Length: 160
Image (spheres, rainbow, N blue to C red):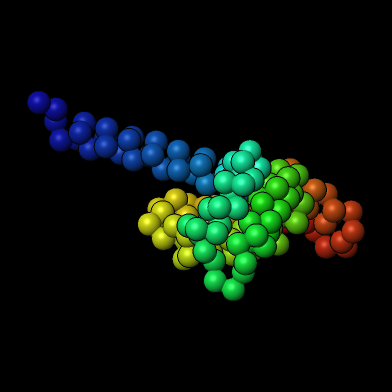
């Protein structure tokens, strides 16, 4: 058996290492985190658009029979959905208009959750979490948003 002082010393070393690891993780810049968030969300919506476009008639049928959104005719809803799913991923990858794109996709995610697939809330909450980070913290320094802000603003671009 180990003496109590040795055990306490080992515990202290482990705690110190854990605290240093947490400190290093907390220093990871938002820019490094924002890029995979942007790419992940872009992929989800881009893939959805590609699925619709692969068989447009089947997509229209889904909007007519399964999705049945209130207030919008199925054809309008389908065109609107695929338009959003084609444009917003490109903007996210470029980091252009990231915050407005996040608002649009949060709205679309809400519509999907409420009217189309309410049982898929675990997936939708993941999308929403990623989008909320992008909405609140922006695209990061590796983005056109950051470049444009620096180019046209007299204020420092700390949070774009």
